[in-house]
Image 1: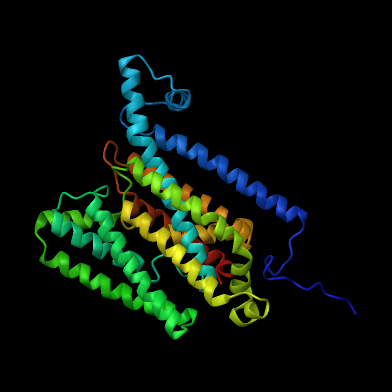
Image 2: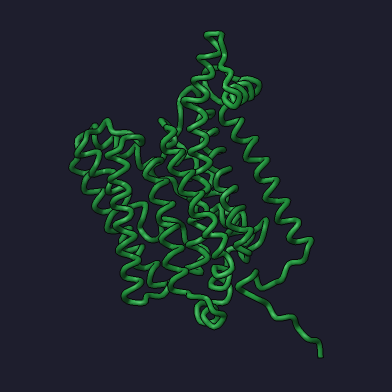
Length: 363
């Protein structure tokens, strides 16, 4: 009788990959980094000031060395690149990565491939908070305005606190958590619709613009906040990736038998995913499909082991958002289509393709 090798769900996916598999996964992550770097340079280049690749490289080198251009035209271009384009692309990279990581965590922990960062009602709650801020502080509020960010964050965290409190006190399972999130999504969506119905034209326009999602008017403090947040939570997520594998592949009871504190891991990781989502959409507005599509694309490439899936999902989400923003600036140049609209237009066909051609990959 052949002796089968026992699998270790805590350490890896059910199918133990060999050295070649690990080499391929590491190579895929390296290739993703290179592709993202090239896409970022392309995103920085796109604009009305006529910058080319050499201008972008020169601006980066000048920033690193501290040797600012002396020519007035070159200095103006340098200020445009570093004051407007670099923070825009950086926010797209970090925001896309954060949403993709959140989506990966939600799909794994709730064991549902159709879960996104908005399943628990975080985005509708943030939209409601931002709508209140716009009503109170005027329709001219933008994505960089502090009251709008505070309002979006406050209600996103309030929604998350309600969900996690219910989960902890009632010992809710994953399916019930999803249903609670759907109910809260409908509630906050209705409240936001009420504000829009009674709002004046200027306020209504501002609310609608925010719900489209955009990285316009990105500023460096937003980039810094997201960068610090990702730097803080990513090591913990990597540390818990084995436990997340156990929950995702084996289920709660088998994971508990393997020594995983299922309730604790799920609550902590969901809190992290909710925080990443709340902070990102507070800065960018509502951006959909990244958190839903990026994990599926990454899973097709590197497999379902969360040690590799999480970083590659982050790269995929960042690339999707950078490319979407670049397309939004090219389609009707010099006008700009909000990245949330382009993201939905690009993400929906991709997801339909995955559903129709790779059904097993999303089951």
